[in-house]
Length: 244
Image (cartoon, rainbow, N blue to C red; front, top):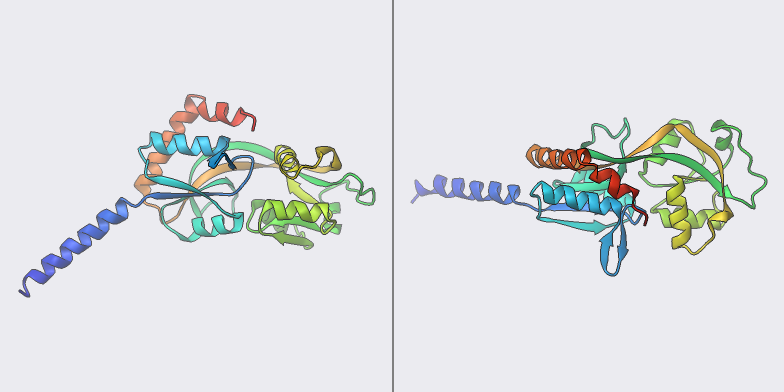
C-alpha cells in the first residue's frame, strides 16, 4: 500500500502539469479605439489582430475580457497565461512582459479645451506648469513622470480622465489624435472643443500586444510566429487601417 503512494503522487503531478499546459489564455484589454463592445461582442482592429494571431497559432482556448486599464495591467503583470493589448512598448516595460508584436506606432499629443486661452505651450517643458490628466499605469503616465512632470492627476480609465478635462479638473491630457476623436464621439462632444497644444514627435508610442512573464515560452513562440506571418502578409497593417 505504501509503495503505491509515490506512484499516486507522480500521477497527480503529471495531471497537474497537463492541466497547467492546457490552461486557456485570458486576453485582457480596455475600452479603446482598438477594442470596444458592440452588440454584445468585443470588436475593434486590435481585437481582430489578437484573435487572428491566436487562432492561427492554434491557441483557440482563449477569452477576451474588458477591464479598466489599471486592472488589466495588474493582471498581465502578475498572472500566468495572460495576453494584454493594446499596450505601449517602452524601455521600462521591456523586461516585464513577453512581447508578441507591434500593432502600430502613434504620435502622442497634448490636448487642452479650446476655450482655455490661458494655457499656452511652446515646449514640453512649459506643460509642467499645468495639471495633466493621465491613466494609472498607462505609458503616458510613465513618460511624463520620467520627463519630470509633478502635477499629474491619475484616473482609473480614459473616460474618467477625459471627463476631468471637460470638468476643468485637469488642464491637459495626452493621447493620440485618433484616440481623441474616438473618445469625443463616445462622449457625444464635438472634437472641435479640443485643441492640440504640443506633439511629442520624438517619442512615438509602439502600440503592442504582450504576454505575462509567467506564460510558457512555447505559447509565446507560437503566437509570435503567427503574428509575424500575419504581418508579413500585410494583414496587420490592413486591419489597423480600418476605421472604427
